[in-house]
Length: 110
Image (cartoon, rainbow, N blue to C red):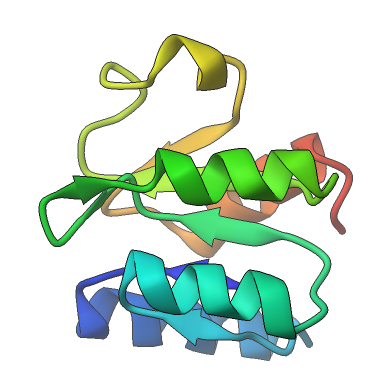
């Protein structure tokens, strides 16, 4: 699952993942992401931290509760992380697919 409020960034990330053979679910709001977590099955998530002015930490907490791995992709780096998520791999925008792939590998997703 990709949670990203900037459509161009989200679609570009989906394209990168598709080229690597992944199927993606796209959410542009926290509410849509929460609905996808409840209704769909997926292996991992890539979460923007600031989504329409709100932090994605409630989504991250639900993913963690369900045992689903995730990474953060943000323009702010890891400086803004809530202490509960300090160890989560984070890629800084603009990122390359290689950076995304390394972060996903760090959480056990090839």
